[in-house]
Amino acid sequence: MINHWINGQEYVSTSGKTLPVYDPALGIETNQVAIANRSEIDLAISAAKEAFPAWRDSSQAKKQNIMFAFRELLNNRKGELAEIITSEHGKVLSDALGEISRGQEVVEFATGMPHLLKGFYTENASTGVDVYSTRQPLGVVGIISPFNFPAMVPMWFYPIAIAAGNTVVLKPSEKDPSASLWIAKLFKEAGLPDGVFNVLQGDKESVDGLIESPDVESISFVGSTPIAQYIYENCAKKGKRVQALGGAKNHMLVLPDADLDLVADSAINAGFGSAGERCMAISVVVAVEPVADQLIPKIIERMAKLRTGDGRRGCDMGPLVTKAHRDKVASYIEIAEEDGAKVLVDGRNPHVDGEPNGFWLGPTLIDHVPTTSKVYTEEIFGPVLSVVRVQSFDEGIALINSGAFGNGTAIFTNDGGAARKFQYEVQVGMVGINVPIPVPVAYYSFGGWKNSLFGDTKAHGVEGVHFFTRGKAITSRWLDPSHGGINLGFPQN
Ligand code: NAD
Image 1 (cartoon, helix red, strand yellow):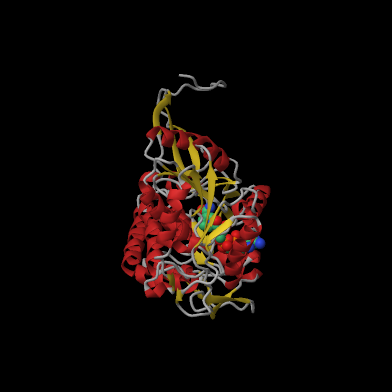
Image 2: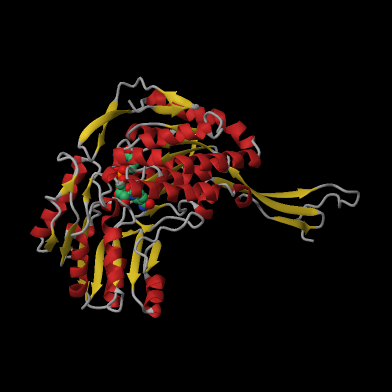
C-alpha cells in the first residue's frame, strides 16, 4: 500500500479506506493508495505545525544548504523518479524526465531564497527614524496537486514554501501518489528536519480538512476548474490565502505567413506530448485562411509517424491515465461526428506498442470543429487536436478572447507587428510567439487568466515567494541624547 509521510517517516494508514492505483500502459491495478481519515489529516497538520517554529528559526544558510543537497540528490537520481511517474501516470520516460527537470528549476530558484527575501531599508525616514521591510513565512501551507504532473506541479510550490521557512502538507493526486512519497524520502536524505514536509494521501475529505483547519495558513491548488473554484471560494470564506490554478483550452493561432513545417512540428509536440494531458497542451489550431489546407497534410504526415505505446519502450506517446478518462476523451470524437466536424485521423482503434489492456487512445485530428460544439468549448485533456478555420487575424484573436479559459496560447507568424498586437490584445496569461508551450522558466511565474486561475498570485518566481510570505514594515528609532520629547502629531521631518 502507498502510505502517508508524516513527521519524517512513512505512516501506515489505519483508515481502512484505499483506492486502486493502475499502471496505465498495462491496464492493471498495481497498488492501493491509503485514503486518510480525520485523525490522519489532523496528524499530518499537527506534525507540520510542530515543526514550524524551529524550521522558521533555522538560519538562511542551513535552509539553503538543505535545498542544495536536495537538488543534487534529485539531479543524480531523477531516473528513479521518472520510472515511478511512467508506471503510474503512463507518460513516456523522456517526458517524465522532462517534467522533473522543469520542477528542478524551481528548486534551483529556491536556493536563492536569502536574496529573494531581502527587504528594503530607509535610513532617516524621519529624523533618527529608520524604516525597513522584511518578508516572513506563513506557517503550515497546504498543497493539492493534480495527476498530470505528479513531480513538477508540487515542485512549483514546496521548494519555495520550504526555503522561505514554511512547513508543508502536500496532498498529491490519488491516481499517481508514489512520486511525492519518493520526494519525501529524498528530502529526509538531504537533511530536512522531520515534519517540515509531509505527504497526506487522500481524497476530498483531506482537501476539505486542509481548507477547514485553522492551523493551515494557505492553500495552493492545481487541478480542474470546478474544483479550483470550489477551493478558492471555500478558502476565501475562511479568509485563507489561496491560489487555485484550474483547467485550460489552449489555442494556437496560425497566420498564412508562418513557417508551416515549424507549425506542424509544434502542433504535434504541443497537441500530443504527454497524450494531451497537459494544462498547456494545444488543443485548438486556429488557422487563418487559406492556411488550413496547406497545414493539415503536414500535420497528418507527422501523426502517421508517431508511435503510441508503453512509455518504457521508447514510444512517442503513452496511454491515458485511467480507463474512465480514456473513454471520456474518446467520447468527444463521437460528439465531433454528431456535431458535423470532420474526423481526419481517428485514434479510437490505435496500433500500439504495448499491452492490449492499456488505456490507449491514438492521436486524433478533427477539422471544421464548430465553436458551439463541446469539442471546442470543453477541456478534453487528451490527444485530440481540433482545427478551427477563421477568415482573419482579428477574428482569430476575438475567438481566443471569447473563451472561458486563459491559460496558454501561441501565435505562429513571421510578422513582428502581428505578434506584438497578439501579445498585447490576447486575454491569456502565458503567450508564445512561435513557441507552442510557453511555460515560463522558474524565475518567472506560471499561471493563467479567467477560469484558469482563481486568486491573483501565480506559481513560482517572485509571485511564488510573495504567496508563501507575509510582508512586514518596521519603523524604528533608537534613542539618542537629542530625542525630541512628546509629539502628538505625525513625525514629518
Ligand atoms: P482534479 O481537479 O480532478 O484533481 C486535482 C486534485 O483535487 C487532486 O488532488 C484530487 O484528489 C482533488 N480533488 C478531486 N476531486 C475533489 C473534490 N471534489 N473536492 C476536493 N478535491 C478534489 O484534476 P486532475 O484530473 O487530477 O488534473 C487534471 C486537471 O488539472 C485538468 O483540468 C488540467 O487542466 C488541470 N491542470 C491545471 C494546471 C494549471 O497550471 N492551470 C496544471 C496542471 C493541471
